[in-house]
Amino acid sequence: MSVIKKGIVRSGEYNGWKVEVDFDEGDTKGYYIYIIKSPAEGYDAWCKDMEGVNDELEKWNVAWE
Image (cartoon, rainbow, N blue to C red; front, top):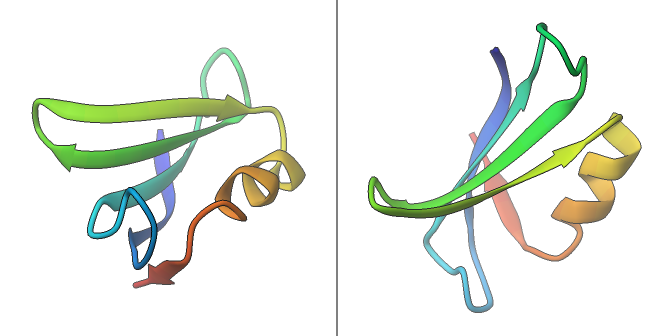
């Protein structure tokens, strides 16, 4: 997988959590969104295209690196 972009959520219930968007060059050819609080706590979502990624990311105020 290759990292598309990284950032930090700046508001809401996930304030301070890291966000990473990765492109899956393997089987799915889609995008994974990871939201990470710690190595032991986090979530992910899969989207087939960048439109889906943008729809998911609308939920959070992300400060991108």
